[in-house]
Image (cartoon, rainbow over all chains, first blue to last red; front, top):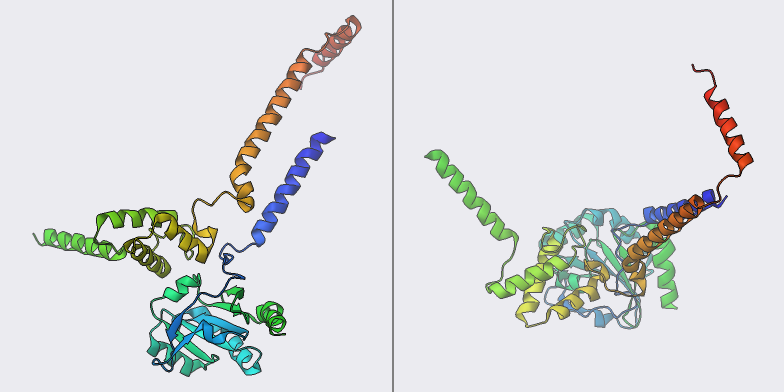
Length: 174
Length: 156
């Protein structure tokens, strides 16, 4: 009897491992920055380049930092979701305009609408490196203490917003 | 002659393009270190290429970052730490040995050892079977009868 049971057990364990492996997305690399302070930056604002913005300015507030670019195709996909979120006033969205030409970025916002309280310019992607950005768009949820609590890799989908981001924001705001 | 000129021009164009692809540092030592470091780090955009091989924008930026940090006099370990802090252990082609990677490091050894164990167990068992008691006289006769009966089967 064990003659058949042992290979069967091994087979079942293997299937279980492979099934889990199939469900994982190798593109989603867990960020080591979760629950760590958001990396510091001081960057010029997209609409007013003479003014700067820093993550320090947001201490005491829960906010989203959305990494976007006019050249990024998936950003268009998530754009309506961000517009709706901005309209609902649930949480302020700040944009990190990543490796983009400011004039292209401004034209993009004029064309599609601007969900951001403000955007900052990361022209050569250095702040992007500090935040471990590797696939635009990416969205960080940052708490009142200035710690990163969640990172969405790829576009913010309505499902991700409803199931993960908004409940987390609500919890952090209370 | 025209053909030769064309070939020369094409070769030159290739060489020029190759120089564009990898931002090189002026100092050959810096360059060598940067290449060695870049080969140890995985590009997160095209995950099966190292930062040194990849032409993704991020890899280009990270190569620049590595060269700048070398120029600042940072150690190799310091630069690797910088990358791990931002992108996690995933950037390392050689992951560190820790609780989460225990299975990764020891798995093949454990698998090999258990395979060897099963093999040895089976070989021993087979030897034990071979060394079994010989048949008794009646058993021997029965076996002979059965074999004889088998060979008398009509052939098709």
